[in-house]
Length: 138
Image 1: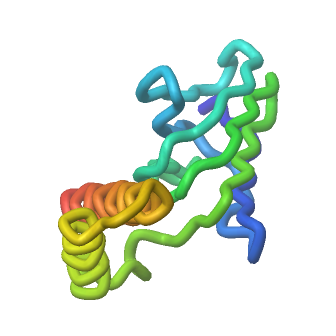
Image 2: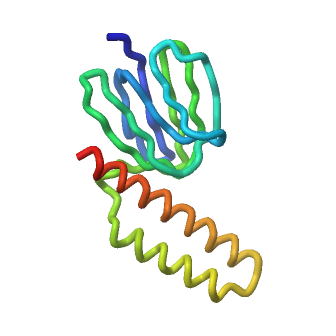
């Protein structure tokens, strides 16, 4: 089976390094699937789940808050702003953060508060999508 090397790195740590058979992430133009032999590409990532299928068939779901995906002939690199394994996300804290962001939108008084609330809301929605994808895989 053909494989390619993959590294998923955030500012804090390396989350994944190894041979993969497939990677699925959400770029700015939509979902992108990467298989061995993919055309070289660099794209920005949107917040959301990313699926990494290891060469042995095991699949891991990782939340990325955004970043860059670089595809080379034998290597895929993800440089994420922040990243977490889906099984490390705390659903109750994310739901609470979403509630607080929605409350901030209701009580907003200036553009800065509105932008902060929208960013927080978008992040919590993306994290909840990641949890749902992870639960569907387990």
